[in-house]
Length: 344
Image (cartoon, rainbow, N blue to C red; front, side, top):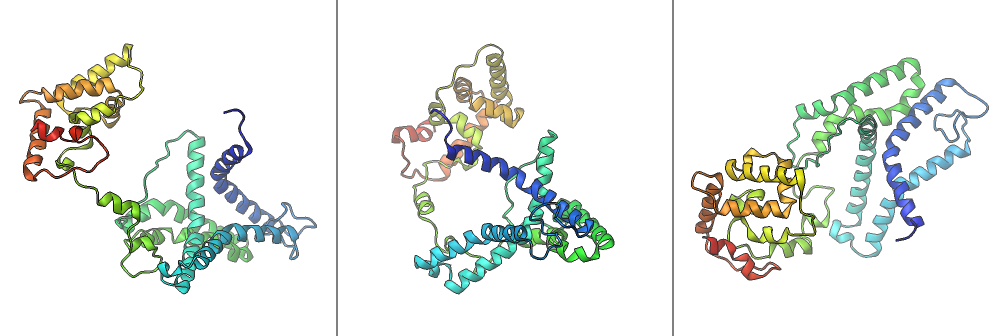
């Protein structure tokens, strides 16, 4: 592809700065507090630091203007685009769209200090080569107050201690610290409130809440398979189905040496004891190697009555008996999709 172009380099720099943004902001706040406690001086220690005592600091005003543009500019552009395109009615009208944008901005400002501390902690853990957990967002509304307090209790205690020290050493600096400290103090309550399941007719709704998007409509109108795979786990479907076993034959080099022997042992153990005898990583290793998957596929269909895979085949047959065959409308050959009926 030749040399990296400027757009590629800017994308890499942006990715790096996305990791450094939260630690840099935390350092910025700490240095701002240090400058404020150091007292007035002829020239500020850091250009543009908000805590400087100079009322007419041009660098500080420029920093505030650029920060406001980055925070509110995209939101104003988005509202203007929806208004000029005549799509505000999908959001409940122009007034409701503006009000929802304002509420979302307040929520983003409240969550920003919490994200800064959590993100900084993750970056420090990664630098120290510690395990950093990464899980999906919980949008099911099942976050209890106790679990929320357990997650954000350390942040709450740290913010309370920091705010107490600031009020003790520099009471005049307390109003400047409240916009950052107050959301952290309310982090458990904010997590419970924002994590609840919204009801119909509430604010902060988007058109997709009332009208399903086209791609989801197409997925829902796709005809069901002739069998019910819900009675089989994902791994059981991959192993039993010749369709999956056939399409897994990608350009992968065959395993040799110790790796081949290790895969053979995994296949043998899984064929004899079932999938519960292997860990999730070991199951993934079998799926990622076509030869091992095909070997397990053949052994599963030839399983004896006392084998766990015989029970899998029985469950598959029962799922076929519970519902009549239905037409299949998936982008594959119909002959490949009737394997379950032929097997029964």
